[in-house]
Length: 301
Ligand code: PMP
Image 1 (cartoon, rainbow, N blue to C red):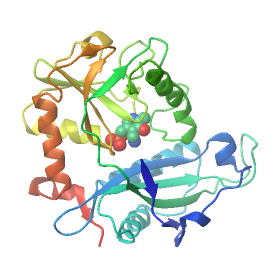
Image 2 (cartoon, rainbow, N blue to C red):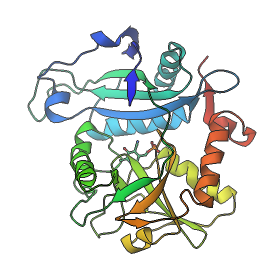
Image 3 (cartoon, rainbow, N blue to C red):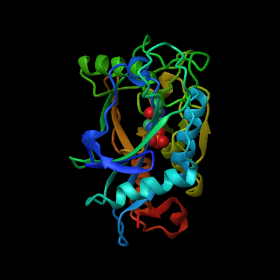
């Protein structure tokens, strides 16, 4: 659970979060046309620092463009806004959420305006990140929307409804998280995380055709290559995933979450050695302790 910081950035002005509301008839509420991106910030010896913020802002702007939301702020302004909202909190760990949305009270499918409102907010974590391995479920009929229906690069509110219902189904079945399949029945991704298997010493994750280009996914692939671990970005059959030596999910909020079981099959040990190494490297990099990846880390102040 994360709570939103008391003040947020709204189109260039710091405002009280409690005042930043949306009309019920807004297009964003009625049609789900809000796009967002979620980054993170972490405690370092030099104060809170933001992780891969430029990549998050670039992905946010791309999402907005794909939906036809005109964002009037450039990349630099949105990076600055993120630093400002982090600097305004007293916490040194949390998430940053950029949102662009049609707030006009026009629930018609195509609103007359294309001008988006933009908000940037810090979200503060209430609980420490979980460390116990995840129980995953899959269902043959729980699939990721195909790219012909919605480009997986679009991080729009409406895109999460199907995955939300699927996660509920996984929980009802005694699991904690779902991994959705792609159109061909191979592994796609979790509702808000990319999926990985470790098989015979190689790291295996589905290609980008059906899944979001996760910024953590990208970092994991790079760190694995640096460690000399072979990387496969290829369709990942469900049998390979469920019989993997190790499996994990990646997302900004974890960033690497070990998987303990898939459809009741237990993976031991969890986290396995490859997953554990990645968790440790992320922790070192995000706390500013790895000089080789300093470019990923930006001080808030
Ligand atoms: N897939 C989906 C559908 C997501 O919403 C997210 C979270 N943004 C991810 C994967 C993981 O992406 P990232 O590592 O950039 O947080």
